Image 1 (tube, rainbow, N blue to C red):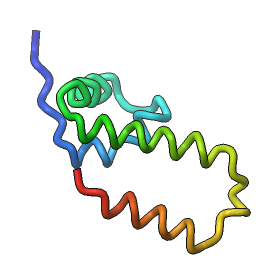
Image 2 (cartoon, helix red, strand yellow):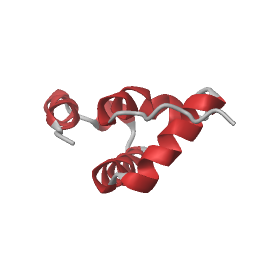
Image 3 (cartoon, rainbow, N blue to C red):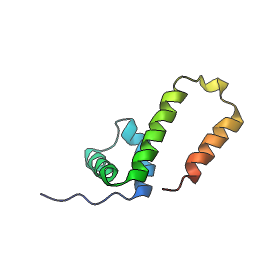
Image 4 (cartoon, helix red, strand yellow):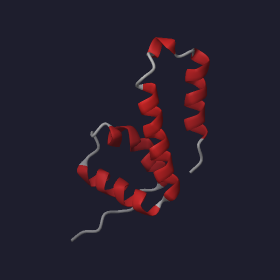
Length: 81
């Protein structure tokens, strides 16, 4: 059986929304899940992202100030794994 190539942390960050939406190709989903089994930092990142989605799902988008939106975008952009 062919072994799947490792997924680096940066690639995980780039494909995370597709993974959470169920839109990631099976091969890449398996690579991502294998990476999560080995990488505590990415596991924590994914959990934080899930918590953010759960919280944001309860907030009406029009109630989010531009400052908060920019702050959230910057926080995830600046996150170092």
